[in-house]
Amino acid sequence: MSDAIRKVSIVGQGLIGSSITRAIYARDINANVVVTDSSDKVRRKVRELGLGQARVVDDCVEAVKGADLVILCVPVRQIAKVAKLVAPAMKPGAILSDVGSVKASVTAEIEAAITADVELVPAHPLAGTELSGPEAGLPSLFENRWCILTPTEKTSPQAVEKLVKFWEALGSKTEVMSPLHHDFVLSITSHLPHLAAFAIFHTAKKYEGETGSDVVKFSAGGFRDFTRIASSNPSMWRDIFIGNKPQLLEILKRFIADLQVFSDAIEAEDLETLTGLLSQSRITRRKVIEKEHISVQPKSDQEKSDRVLIRPYASDF
Amino acid sequence: MSDAIRKVSIVGQGLIGSSITRAIYARDINANVVVTDSSDKVRRKVRELGLGQARVVDDCVEAVKGADLVILCVPVRQIAKVAKLVAPAMKPGAILSDVGSVKASVTAEIEAAITADVELVPAHPLAGTELSGPEAGLPSLFENRWCILTPTEKTSPQAVEKLVKFWEALGSKTEVMSPLHHDFVLSITSHLPHLAAFAIFHTAKKYEGETGSDVVKFSAGGFRDFTRIASSNPSMWRDIFIGNKPQLLEILKRFIADLQVFSDAIEAEDLETLTGLLSQSRITRRKVIEKEHISVQPKSDQEKSDRVLIRPYASDF
Image (tube, rainbow over all chains, first blue to last red; front, side, top):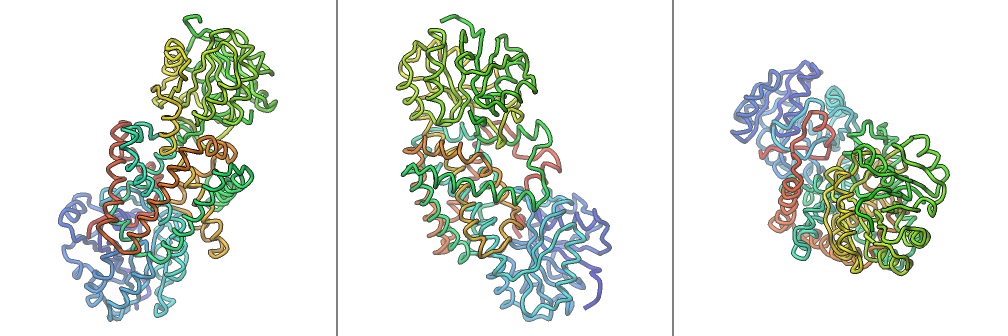
């Protein structure tokens, strides 16, 4: 394995793939970039956009030739399939990575699919928007965001270190953990919140017959935040949910039990228990804010207006 | 009852109360404004802020004297108590309103508490932020937001019309409906989403022992949107949840059942069912967007960056 990453191949040029391409050029990283996408339309769009000096090729096998690092930016269900396709064409000892939201099951699939002499370093940048496609990419997408690397037992520390450096060069903070631990953390911080947002829509939709168009009409407040979360790509999330099935089902079971605790406290009008339950989030929120060094105070009146929730009074009269 | 609202009394100067005060002056509404708050600190802050030409008085009974419109901007649990206190001091035929998030139970409480000859027109502006206090108020808070009016059977159409005009003068869109229908709509669009956000925190917190500090550390993505929602005032939401108990428990029961449907589909890896479940929100989201005439496309790169969710790829490779 050579010491530096001189050539990067990015397979898939959607939001994340094209953001990586953009970030490499925006941050003056000294590497040749070859990109591809299975969609003619996406490749055409990438050529149109002219992302840095990236070379756009039609075929993923051709794209990975001679690369020191190959990043698969394709949907979770496609990762192992594409890995199997490209790995034999890769330079021996080169790094094969991805950006998928689930790790344990997919990493096992990749390991079963490839026999080539490559260094497998799965990764997951905790960044994105609810938008899709190469035109939605942003050079700054990964700045100050976490990128979690989940090497296998066979991965060399040198390969991990190289990928850590690569993501840090893109502006990310990095953390190395096991695929299973990743899936556990993400089940709480990402998969469950998304599932809850999707499910609230489902519940609202079923109720729409009774409420006429009111759900839609009066959707200011909490619901609006959920609409944004739940407007994400359905097939992508379906695959994430299934890909992280054991962890997600476990956390979902606990969440349903906890909702029942809330329900019982409301039913009993148990003020003390309810206050305790509702206060925890303020404490956790504060910790989130402190950790991220972001201000809880809005910067402008516009930003204050943008934070619209249904919170109709606030004094303690 | 006189024809115009010449004097407005606003009891409670938290986020909503102080925003009404601000909006009256910002929009050049020709009315005398008297404000009060049970908290010395809040009254002092309001005097310091000097909201328009509003007169700040120490006592709510004094504040309502001679007013054509009295708006109680106090927590849900306090509304009936304060109504009982101020109604006897009100001008006969004047309008008594509020801004509470729950209507059926509170309206019944108010009706039971007062005997004075006043026109009761409860209202609920669907606006707010997760911030509290008089300094958090905004003159533009109600612009283009819904304000739902929920008159009782005894309320005169003239009184309803007057309050409609008042809220429209503050920039709101208005809708008149029964208290019960209001509570039904809000249970879906506001109370359930908030409850879900609070509950996810509870679940995460219980799990924290197992995850160390990881939940907090990696809270980018869906979780972050929830932190904002769930950082709202615990005692306020406790009272909203209990105040809307029958509607909320019903919708919560349905939500739990729907979560179980999602769970079963994930367990069975039923791709077709899951895709169907997850696609509904996209359709509803589109309807929300269309109704609100807001663009789904971010206006700037900054805004795109601000919409950070965990969505690590988007092409259909």
